[in-house]
Image 1 (cartoon, rainbow, N blue to C red):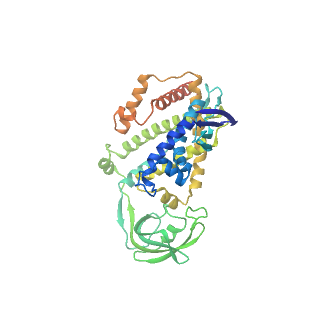
Image 2: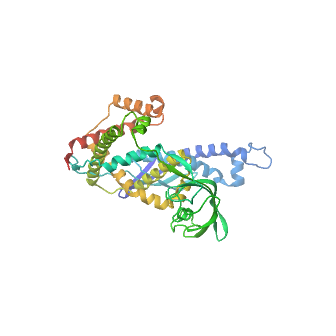
Image 3: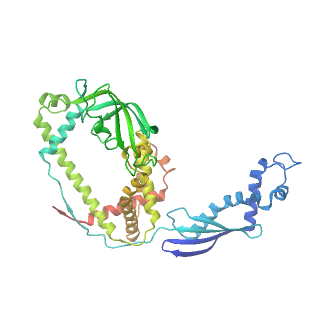
Length: 427
């Protein structure tokens, strides 16, 4: 039950809530029934000792901790609801009093969703620039096609060079002692790709099949594994194989064999058409981004730091999820990119701030302009999400609350309205 509600800072409230002595007694009894089988009292079989006997033996408060743990979450949630607060983070909860006579009292410090103001976002002016398609861009795409048709040819008559793919064994040593995660056998590495820490690949160049040699490198100062950060190490290498990429010749026969066209000229014309379509699409995306940046500039209000941190958390989790589908753990990704979790989070910070501000702005626009999603639109969106993930709409409803999906629809409507009202000039 909520007893008091006090604002202590912008977007920060302190709630006091209490549980009656009767409700606390019920929770204590539940805690006793839950624990009694684990408590031994001389003269009683396990699980048969009366509660008062246990309390006499171990103290009246023996079950208080479990009872309070049962009560605090529903009590605080009810208090937040009674206070009419929308939280953006879990509250910090403190138990201020526990007694048989008075029950339990809690204090919860809550960070709330901010109330922002939004300036006029209709008529935002932006410039649309569609980049021209050049011959170099066309040749670049043709180069990719040739690479897809390339074959790897084993090399045994020369040393490795940049662009080659080598198969190596390696093991890393710091101060003569092998370190964890620094060993692999028959590892495929493209020289010049920058996959390994600076200096590693350069020192493989010039070696031939069968060579066994040492590589001396120094880990970056901000390397994730602190015991290796800034440390000079030695990798012992054995080079097993070298291969190079051999590209096919670009001619009409290649075009006929690999595309639906007959000549190189027809292929180039089609590539140009697709590049122009892509340039138009990219320009439209940049325009939308510029419009949304204009919306963000119209936001005024103090936004809790935790909202930015929460969004960064989500972005890191999303990256870890994508990597896991490739069989790569986040720790390994950080190790091979020379990043730390701190530097990764820092790289996401600006984007996180923009996303948080934009979402708040769009939700404010929805509220100010009375935008609503119909029941039919909600059902249609459930159907679309179900098709996207290959599950029935009714199953999707078990995972996505209707009020959340409804707000997403309304936010998209806001985006469409703001875009439609924008003033777009062509460069």
